[in-house]
Image (cartoon, rainbow, N blue to C red; front, top):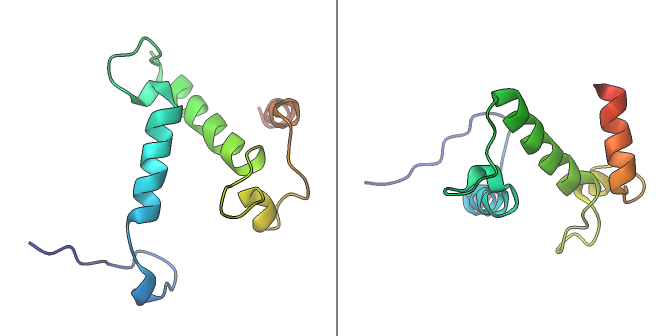
Length: 98
């Protein structure tokens, strides 16, 4: 059986389509969000709490953590932020949105 890449949205270069970026993100999520691993006591009883934990993880990765190969945050690379956020800034932003 052969895996055939299919474009869902956008206009990607067919020569550069691969699953390695998605697989890396999945591994990072499983390693950093204990709620996604088996046999832990860090589980969410409510879907709302599970979604909040995942959202906080992605916000931290994009706004607070400097990416190894980019040498800046993904949000800075995308032009969304102009500096590395502290966790305090991230949580203050979360309070403003909620």
